[in-house]
Length: 216
Image (cartoon, rainbow, N blue to C red; front, side, top):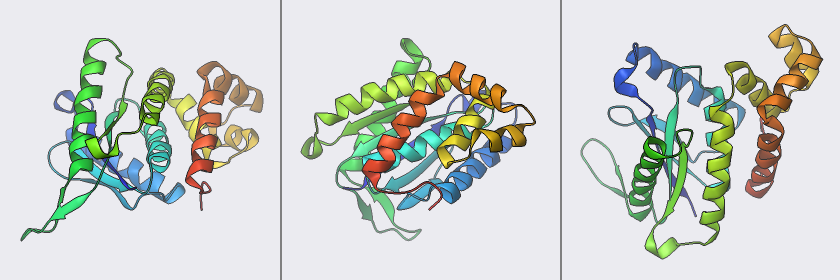
């Protein structure tokens, strides 16, 4: 079943360069779509600081959103609500409008993760909600994983995110060292201290479940 994703920019109203942030976000989305083309409908701006997209499965959405968080530059981050449920459209003179239980669930998920971020889990960025007719006990497990994953990414430096992104794309440590202008040992140390190994293994499991290859 396809899943809906709603994203919004964290702290968009306080960004010193809102237009620049939007460009950086859209550039990151385009980069991920090129490196990992999983979306049925790639994340696209809708209104304000929000983007919407559709993925063929929960695993595909979770894989792509990890890549996107890692691809974003310092100072720009997003929240993601993933909705599981039927997706539909309402005809309009300006084009089809997204509608249906999956989209309502994605909106609920955004609200939940926003509240968790604001109250007790500042590093939380991603949540899954399911429509009543699509409830799955496995979603609880997935949300537990996402909370831990988001904590790791939220505490990473920009370099650690770049290196981890590269490893998810299949780049070797030697290749990353050359790109960064550092030694391979420094790459290994940076990845190790940032907890990248857990992200890489989790990503591998998701990609296998989604039955795709990075860069395909």
